[in-house]
Length: 132
Image (cartoon, rainbow, N blue to C red; front, side, top):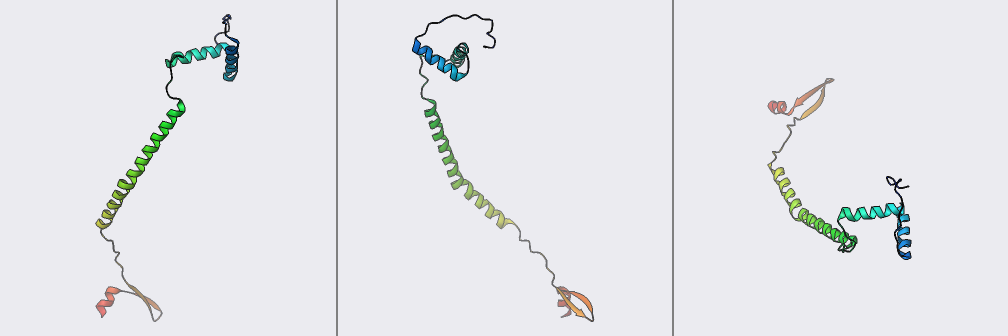
């Protein structure tokens, strides 16, 4: 039953047989009664400001293809920017920062282990140079 239209009475509208068959098939496809299908169609035309006499312009498929082409163009431009501008600039900046970093050489003391009468002694390189 049609929601919100239960208590309304029916009226007749005359259609050609071929148009009535098409409309009934369309109503079945929409899954609504004939009255609700017609109401939805009228609401669609009124809400979108469309007249059945006017042309809608290019089909949705042609618009979709046009948008896809534009998106592919934008992707190509972004890849070109990345390839020719961003990556070389990043490489130059990284090379500049690598050269600007002070070299960090850890101070290494040479440790020598030797056994002297069963004891283990540790000698630093500095102590050894003082002894020589």
